[in-house]
Amino acid sequence: MSVPPVYDPNEPARLQENDWDCSVESTEWGLYAWGRTPDDDWLEQSMIAAGVVTPAVGLCDASGAGLARWINTEYGEFGYWAENLNPVSFDTLAAEAATLSHPIMAGGRAFYHWVGVRGYDPSSDRILLANPAPGWMGIDQTMTRGQFASLGSFSMVRLTHPEAEAPAGTTPPPPDLTLWEGRIGSGLLEMMGQDGTFPAQTASTWLPLGQNVADVEEAYGVNGTRYVWLLRVSQGFRFSPDA
Image (cartoon, rainbow, N blue to C red; front, top):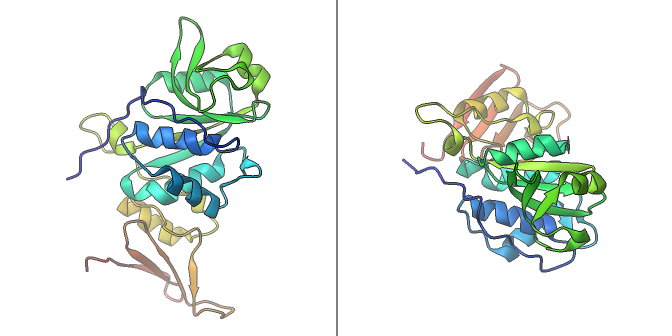
């Protein structure tokens, strides 16, 4: 049995190497805070290849949805689950950060920048940051309510590990597969949810290839299992790599 990871909100910020990779470095901080140690170059190139970031504009989707989807594709098999919230208020972000349950990445439209969010200090009413570019627009490693208002609107991505965050003696919630709705059939998603895994594909494969009316829908899960739905009989099957 694997040991769940432990979140360390005090993990040092990862500093930017380029003027566009703030979301990459903030995500790297979040992964390191969970004990993951991805190679910086791999992280950057993987996000570029997936269309999540480009050197021309940085993060392509300011809502954070694409970033969350990339995290789930790459790290879902290890039990991690990311969700974006767009927009997010100061109070909502502060309240979630104060729980110290998981790392958060947040970006502001007028800020034109993404940072890690590691906590909240109620005595000063400041959000505590893992800022990859300290000093950008006057923001170091904290952000006040007024600064948040002037640099928004903001979006956030929470990087969770449901098993690690579940209270002792409880069962973690099933994976949220709504990001794949409309691209992978409900029958396949239901089977993956039962197995506690995520799709390893952005969309299903339909067979026979090139045929207008398909007989079979299939998609792999990040657990290596091939999930198959036979459309003519409306029934699903699993083909495990261990079988």
